[in-house]
Each structure stands twice: as C-alpha cells, then as structure tokens.
Length: 242
Image 1: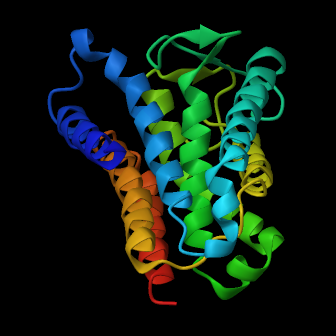
Image 2: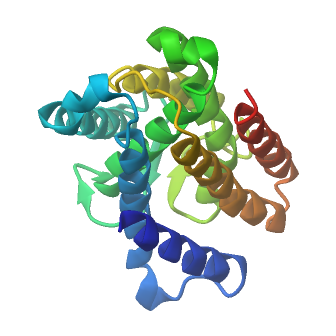
C-alpha cells in the first residue's frame, strides 16, 4: 500500500514542482512526501528474501527505525543549534512542524536516504558480506544525492545557510557530514540479500529522487547538479548489472 501512496504523491508533486509550483494550500505535502519516502524505502529494506533475518521483522525492525530516525534528528538538532557538523543553517516551516528547530519529517528523510543507499550498496559483492564496506558505499551514494538535493532545497527556501560559498551556497562541510552520518546510520540495518524485484524498485527510487531535484536544478541553472544527477542515475543502473 505504501508504494502506491508514495508514487502517487511523487508523480503529482513532481509535476507541480516542474511546472506551476506547489500551491500554498498544498504546502503541507512537502513534509508528507518525506514521510512517505522514508516509509517506502524502509518497506523495501525489510522485504527480505533471506529467511535467517526474519527476526528483523519483529522488535529489531522498530529498533532500527527508531535509531535511524533519532540519529538523524539528533545530528540535525546539533547542526541547527551549533553549526556543527553541517555548517550554520536554519529550517523554514515548509517541511512541517518543528521539534527543537528541526522539522520532524527530517527523521523520515534520513530513513529514506540511508535505506535506499544501503539497498544499492548491497548489490555489490563486498557490500553484501561486509557491513563496513556497505557503509562506505552507502555514504558515497548519500553524498551524491545531497549534491543534487541540498542546492535545490536551499534555493527554494526549505532551509538557508548563513555563509555563502561551497557548492551553490552549500558549505563543503555539509557533504562531509552527510558522508559520515549516512555511513554510520546504515550500520544499524541488517545484512541484505539480493532480491531482483526489490532491488529494481530500490534503484528506481534512488534514480527518481535524483531526477526530481536534478531537473529542478537544471531549471534554475544549477548545471553541476544536473551532471551529478546523470552520474548518480548511471551508477545506480550499473549496480543492477553486478
């Protein structure tokens, strides 16, 4: 059910973003999109073909979810209030209700980023057998996604940075922090065995999130974001061939 809700939300939202923009009366949909994104990515992670990890369908599943959500929210809180590790920034109200200065929907965004990255990383042989290798690959995929997402979100006022510079106004420290946080949070996930149908959905999820923000970047003249979008989509497609 969640995949139907997510893709319907994605299709309508992307069409609006690429054309007339999201009307004021529908601004609440921005935060809900992050919730649906996280839940859909999570559903792919725990649709496991390996019978030995069915325990994760019970209490450990919710523990993993809680750790990733809490970890993501905690590091965002640290960034908003101290400027470390991402840089000094501030969230607008576009993404919904705030908890100590951080939209609660950001926890679901971290779930989506970490889970989709871990699924792609698990396609590689070493990523299946070694969680630390998978964490490094997940971290790299998270940074590729953020190189497209963050400049566009900054431009559209989802959040704002105090110091200009870096990559289209986003400090380089932000991308380094995404690498570290994304990789560490992925370690909470169990080892993932290949599953052709699930893995295809994970690839398409990663690619279409890149496409959504990459096209917005190109529309705004952020040409390097477009290049990263193409690179990320090709790498994700290549993971299916291994």
